[in-house]
Image: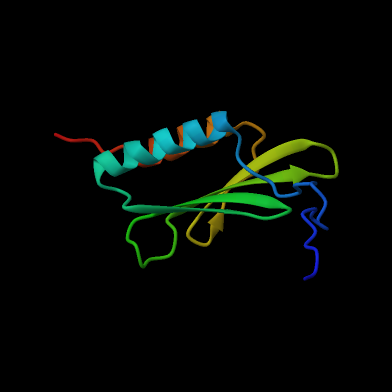
Length: 112
């Protein structure tokens, strides 16, 4: 019988970029705002070494209506955010609060 090593050969360096708890709280509250209004039905979260992406979907089988992307600026630990809607990409912003405000403003409907 051979011995099994319990140690992992992988390093414990987690290099994926994720949204922080504060950022996720803002994004999910914005998403729930859109769900209540009937604008969105689904979402997805993707992350890799260079960026984290939260996508808002109007229908489950559609392409994302909005994509909020967090990425590292240069090699410093400074993060930037950008939003894309459809094929258009909005300007980069360093503050997630401005992007969330922008998304909420776009999804407001005036009811008479």
